[in-house]
Image 1 (spheres, rainbow, N blue to C red):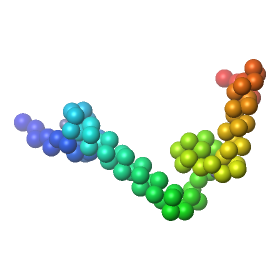
Image 2: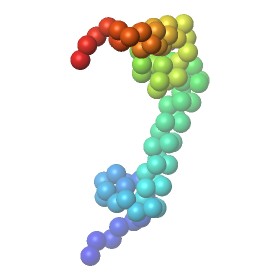
Image 3: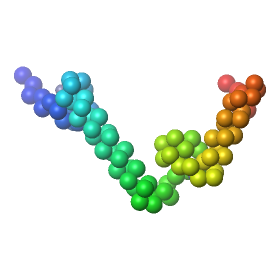
Image 4: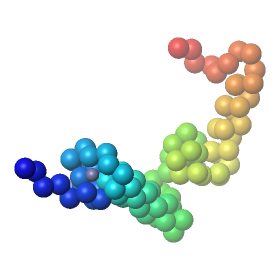
Length: 88
Ligand SMILES: [Zn+2]
Ligand SMILES: [Zn+2]
């Protein structure tokens, strides 16, 4: 008989248990990771951000001139009937 320790992120990730406790633990672990990343960015460690990309704008929530220009350029092409330049 398998002994499963519920309420741990490891059980959620490796054991693939999706009970309420394990889901909460897994979510909490993920949130902590994201928070740590955000804290690093807030602390000024933004050197890894590739400005002018969606990753910088959406994930890193950068609002520098370059990233804002990307967004406005996208919105402009989105609103025009032509759509974005690339097709596919
Ligand atoms: Zn569980
Ligand atoms: Zn930026």
